[in-house]
Length: 126
Ligand SMILES: C[S@@+](CC[C@H](N)C(=O)[O-])C[C@H]1O[C@@H](n2cnc3c(N)ncnc32)[C@H](O)[C@@H]1O
Image 1: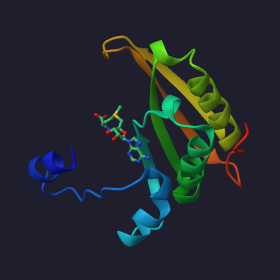
Image 2: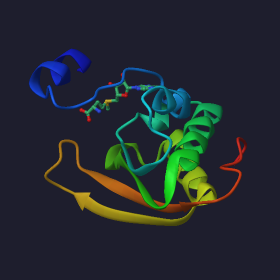
Image 3: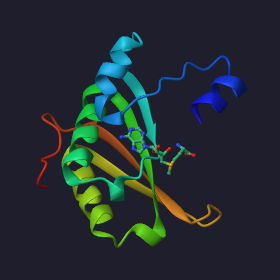
């Protein structure tokens, strides 16, 4: 995907790395804050500590008026990892809007739009 994006969108600055190191990756790219973070990470497959770690990094880089948007497949919503992720989102942000479902996506999904990170980030055990 990185190779494809670099070829197809030469104007785009593509950084390859682990989302758990988001702050460091952005810092090395000369970015300290972001107005928007958009993610399609497979959250429900992540262990709880990794969910919390990445959400903490997102909260640290977002500007006060910034938004974090991510997606979930409807079929995965009952999974324990997906339910834990929703709890972590609500612990990590003052506002979590759920949009959708988007039936035309394959598989159908929804989007979480999150604003105003709570200071200190999500609890690992949430
Ligand atoms: C559902 S795919 C989405 C791919 C692409 N963003 C899209 O929307 O078509 C999930 C992607 O998350 C990437 N991924 C998984 N864990 C990651 C992590 N810790 N840091 C960065 N990317 C990760 C996988 O390599 C995979 O490409």
